[in-house]
Image 1: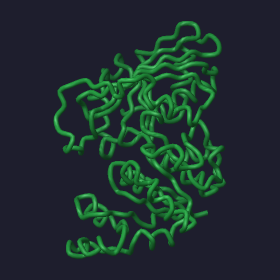
Image 2 (image 1 turned 90 degrees about the horizontal axis):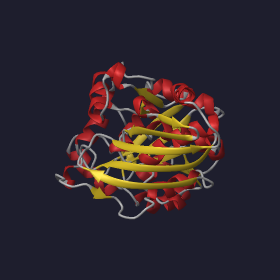
Image 3 (image 1 turned 180 degrees about the vertical axis):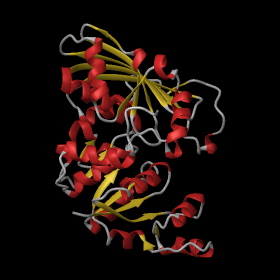
Length: 342
């Protein structure tokens, strides 16, 4: 079964998803949609990725720059089974009627409101629930990180309650328009932050509250998470579960001297394209277990953590025969996900 995929948007997430799709044996990247000529468009052309434009109006700019255009978004929709919408926040909802008219399956990003899709999606939590849906929304980077942890521990122990403080990066590395920051901003000033509400779109039964601040860094988010389990557990057993779980990487300051996001990124720069870290990074030394209470710090690379989930979401909406275990294995192998960076 070959799934024909298009990606609308070729920015931070779109370009990573497109490249990930091109690595899958059961998928074919038909093309990506770009609105204007820039270095990412030139990258796509140099890597033989077919370029489409939103309409004929934008094509002239590409042709003047010597970049071949294969057609418009409407042309692309006639050639694909699944469209991944990686456009700016809110644009996906405006695009939805066009996708529906074309009869294609849809994958949206976490910046969209939950109502844009039939299912809010996180692979380790609800892959089977999303199989066969016409549209899914891959939840945001922070929500993806929280859900990977929660669902991993829930399968092993049962999770009753979660409290988390999220320290958010101020901007992505390329977002120079936001300018320098000299503040720690309550983001938002109210509790819970939207992250708890987003988690509940996948796990509506969960007792969860989150608070968030934004800080002047671009590298990663950091979460301090406290979970209440249904029964008592040992630290050794919690660490064993996390070490065995897919898409979670334990880092130890004793073994690697890594105790900051800067050091995670520096280690990744040596072995990963774009220093992507799609794994959820859990700081092993921070893991504390007291009876049924688990506390830890984890880090989320906002540019890449949702990429594996997007690949799995494509399979889910396309009706792939792959099981949860099979899609995780296939995706992680092609993307080079590992349990360590060294």
